[in-house]
Picture 1 (cartoon, helix red, strand yellow):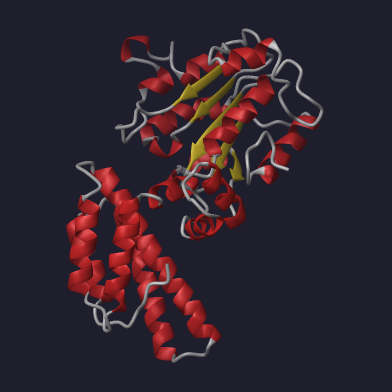
Picture 2 (cartoon, rainbow, N blue to C red):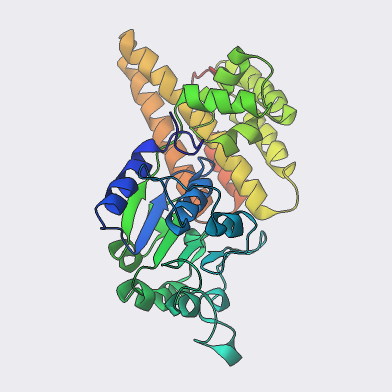
Length: 336
């Protein structure tokens, strides 16, 4: 039975429920886990529960009180959501400590220091904690070190390693795991991303536990690309140049946005990496040649390195060439 209809995060909710029931609720929580698994939805549901005038003993909002009505309409005076605009790559410092002419008199850090207006606490959600620059993180430290009584701050992160140690050490970290295949398959069907249960399960298996990834892979362009990639991988030995051309063209089709291209290449490399892992598992189970197992492990390591380089803003055409050149001459196959 999922909490508030949110699937896959009952264990995280249970930890907060226990802390709430024991009067030991923390002042700052870092919700971390892959993108597209419902962390934002979870944080908003938790905020409504904690602001509710008459929460149930089982830790659920009543949905009827004035606080719940204000929250649902987006006008609760004791709730603040802070997020970047879609095209921003760094969380603006002004969102935390105000514009220069009003510095320390507006922004998240000032807002949360004020007394509650309606509820008995103030709650803020920082949705793009991964985009905190060092200056922004340092500005947030004072609030984390000396939190106002009763306030709760939820920071949402897709990658814990992007958080400064000073931020991590001052938050209670809640790991939100990827959605399991059956849960994700049901969500895929519910949202009309697949026409049959079999198609939904297949898509779930390749989506790394993320509904966001499932939406991306459900695009017919992905099916066409993966079909062509499978055909190229079936050629033995692998033609790295042909694969490089196909991958580069597909990445370019993501549009002019460099982040969109990086996201698409990341998914391509992840899918190939998962295919290699499945082949390695099969090779080990069937006691295939040790040389093949070592080659598969080498390719998996190379995929991980490429993923790191994508996140480090490496030049994409050069990265694609280097990666597909490493695939050349090997005997691989796709299994999607």
